[in-house]
Image 1 (cartoon, rainbow, N blue to C red):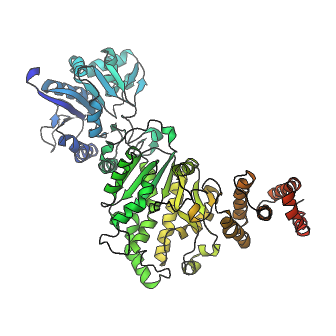
Image 2 (image 1 turned 180 degrees about the vertical axis):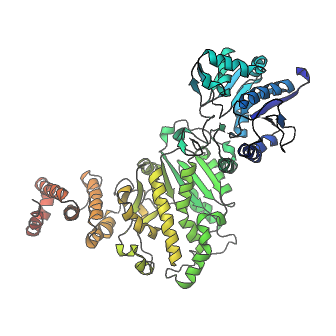
Image 3 (image 1 turned 90 degrees about the vertical axis):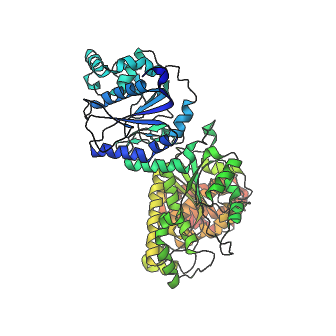
Length: 625
């Protein structure tokens, strides 16, 4: 067929494939269900180049090549003869070539190719390497793109390319490269002086999560950003489904604009969930108008953000983030409430409440309770997706009202400072109150749930990836246990066990709900609440380690002159730290006792308070001095 009579197409997909082995046939079928379906919807021509043996896969897209087997070496023949076939029969501006475990974001690829001229001799790809005498080649797993001019330059070599390549490998003592069809193309690209375009942000030889070998081995890991990804490799059938779902929920990341300066934003992705339980506009729960009004300040927060919601809330949330210019650092996932992890327990919670619901409140329905409990699973999902490749994740309740009820004098800098302070090795949450640890035992659970016992401020927390997975999964387990036992109101009471089980993995801040963000870095607001309701309660219960840590946090702020407390309180915090250290760290108690003496000698106001109770204090400090 003469060139001027060939059908002109903008993009052709050349896939070297095997349909006679079930594993690889399943990959073909899965491709057809996912990204190939997108390609065909855009009138992109797709061709599978197969060995000679016929199968039930029939149609114009399935090209069975005469005298070609279905073994490992045959991939080279299928690739080269496939490219030749497209050149013989079509006038294609660009040709993308890959195998059957590759996934392509077609929308992104089409956009990418708008930047290039098909008349330039282009060889486009990424995730490349050096192999023996070939200084660079694009990863064949991720696939590569040839422009029309590049394809025409290669054309005369395709017929005998495999045999020529074997000879070249022999001459260079590299027989192991015989079947490496991607290395072969890289060699000819250099030989024919094609323009090599390396785009390592778009083409990945690993899967969409940065792993290869069925998700067992990390490859690019932290470097891969799925919102920039054009193609990836080593995709399992499950990966195909999961990534296709993510693309559909996020408009194929077409709205994504890479941040101009990623260092400006904290290395933390915030997560929230917003679901409408009031479709009838009754007075029991928030209606849609109230929801959007209540969450607007959260929607303005300038940080990496993942939003989970339903068909009513997500479109409105997405539009708001777009209006605020924050779409590029936002991701949205629409989920039916019935598909939430926690909702499998809906019937059980309703039955539990028929028998035992001492904290009865008609506004806190079984559904709202389960959505609250589901925050653990939503953060775990966000960690798994990690679209912004951050080291830390956080949860923030969305219904904070315009005045941000978890922060005094809120401005964005306070939130960003809290997120910046996140430690990837820790789970960071604010302690709200002190409870008897007997309630960790099953025999006391009914008493525990007889009233709402404040434990932590669950509306805002941050965590690193690995410790987050461990603690959040444990919280899910406790949620299930409490539900099966017939209890559970809200999610904060689930933390009682976790605070002990993961003591060294948890960074504690202290305070009331209204100062969560203010006190996240250190206790600077409502200090007397911390003193009376947390520090002194720790001392009363004999929870010495917790008492010591709380006193230390307060003293860090007092002695850094970030806060001021009256001198009697200052001395008492010092003495409380000493007492708790005496029981949990005797050597540290001696250091604290000497520090108390030093402070008294330097500060006459503290000395005066000390002298008011000198006999008792001297006696107590004498145990270590």
